[in-house]
Length: 259
Image (spheres, helix red, strand yellow):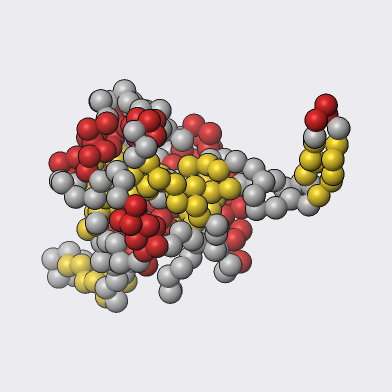
């Protein structure tokens, strides 16, 4: 099963770094957050990726083109015809297709444009700016079990303060500590779809969340998978710094793989 990653947006809310590179290429611990996401999928045995690129898409292509060199020791021998000798060869067993899905294409349009690389098979889809300790194997099994077109992972941010319970006429019934059931469930990506999804996307101007997902809800063809572990997006510089701090401390919850 292939993994599709949306990586074409402008990343305007973290413009301190996205002015120079696509947001999925912003680094956590010296590696792009895109790499962290791909490592999560690889941990569960999924190694074929289709990257929906757009803004500064050449940065993504060049990074993968040089990745083998970045992860190996190299001797440049200029004494014998500019020979390059690669030592300690290391690279993940990935097959990566980077697709230029357009500069201003909306999220749904980006997915539509990569249909030829998916074929008539189920596939996974996620955003290129968030990490989590999602159990991908469990997610895929859940999707296969319910038989619907789509599965969307959801996460409860909850509350970070105490909760006030209010009854009729505004009368306060109780104060209590927050619980895992407080707060709203949000879409965190890490989705699985049958190929019928493509029929629900019109074109480049289709916003994935407002177009096909809404249509699937109307048809009762979208099922929610609740993730109860760790998840964090990287929308702002502050969130990037939080992720960086976790990585440097050696306690990053999304790091499921061995060194």
